[in-house]
Length: 463
Ligand SMILES: *Cc1c(COP(=O)(O)O)cnc(C)c1O
Image 1 (tube, rainbow, N blue to C red):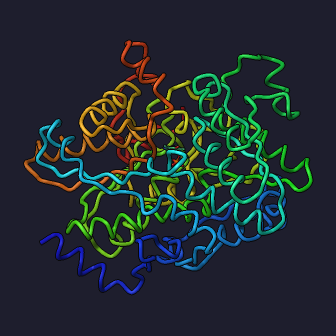
Image 2 (cartoon, rainbow, N blue to C red):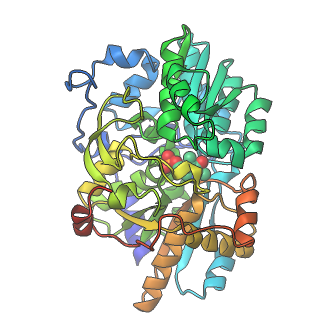
Image 3 (cartoon, protein in one colour):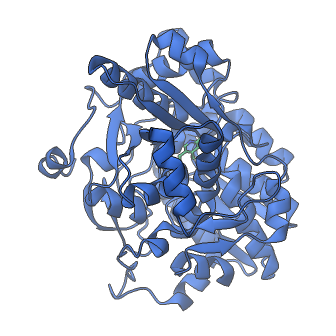
């Protein structure tokens, strides 16, 4: 019955996406354009007026800025990018039967496996597109930040593929926790600096005060931006948060809708972990179209309790970086100065959230839940033992949310279809799993703060 409705909705939808013969979408999907959802413009940090496109042009190539502001619901994917996607897309979508059995749930649990990309995460979807547009416009080098290292790895590979040099500012705590990530980036030809670094004036102010500074994504972003604006032929690349990044990630959800359809199923719950919002938006936004069309569907963003941007942040204009160089964006934020605990899900240690995800959360179209670190590792271990795939610690937040959704449905005697995005594998995170197995992990972030609802969020704003 459910399937019937799902298929009917999809077939009658005039915006049904197109795919290559092998099942890769040929267009990116812009939910905000398609559904005419309003979005607050980014503000100039100096004037607080909407930021002028020329100012952004110092950081990003025109092709990406066009996508950032774009009003087309369906944006064609360039041939060269499609050719690169064909290395690993479509990524697998599987039903986690062994995991269901291990949980003893009556629910059906499905996962979309972005860890199947050569670099091990969904980040390659946007990295390839960003490198392509920069190369096309004559840029010679990209500067970027990386948290856990997945974004730097993805961009390093993509730069190599499209003939660009790449400089990566890697958050210090991850630089030491994840030395193999650095090796991978260097294998792909990138230069990698622990952030705060001595490479930039901004980094020096921190590195001098405290050489062992944990660093943060906010600081690393400031360093990469400073690098880009002070060197000719260099631009900046961001791995999450911005509209064009979310746009590129829409390949995930578009594929997933088709793959679920092939299995004769449509989910009741769609889940993604949330750092800056890109993999969550990637899986969720194409499904959200169906929710806006009247379909009953829960969409959940899962974040760390120690960096609870969506569940504990305030919805306001804030900077994307610590030096306050980026435009002000309307988003859920813990404050640009927030330095989260050094948890192992480095990719989720960001003070802000994508403006598009934030707008949908504020409207109650998506939900957010926060999980303590130990609960996510419990979930990751259970999934690895059942399905054989070691999830990235970031992705384990989505698994924890899937378990919670399944338990809740079981308790109510309902059988639900739960789909989560397995945003990356954890094969380069085995040191953190080792710490977990040895009992060396803390909950990081204190008490379990699950299932915070929007009303509670309003009361608990600020940190
Ligand atoms: C970077 C990363 C995340 C968090 O970033 P989002 O933009 O929120 O997706 C999650 N999972 C993995 C595997 C990552 O590499």
